[in-house]
Length: 89
Image 1 (tube, rainbow, N blue to C red):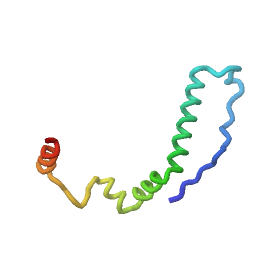
Image 2: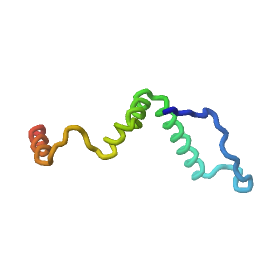
Image 3: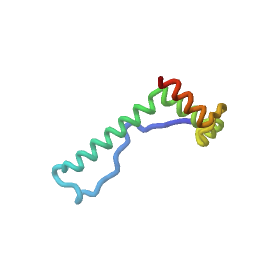
Image 4: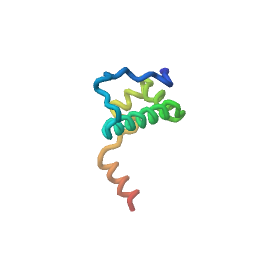
């Protein structure tokens, strides 16, 4: 799996008639939200732990286990409840 980014992509052109001279509070909030989302995404893409997790979950064998939420060790409800009770004391 490869993740590619374009660091300084140009935002899409906007209709000049729709833009006023000063941005509204709502448009500033949206712009700030977009900037924060972009920062978070770029941070995730450059994080080694996140990259390793992506590699693990995109593995066909691992993604099947995650999709069905099954593991090699299946525990019935009573056993899980008993273990939880033991650990809560």
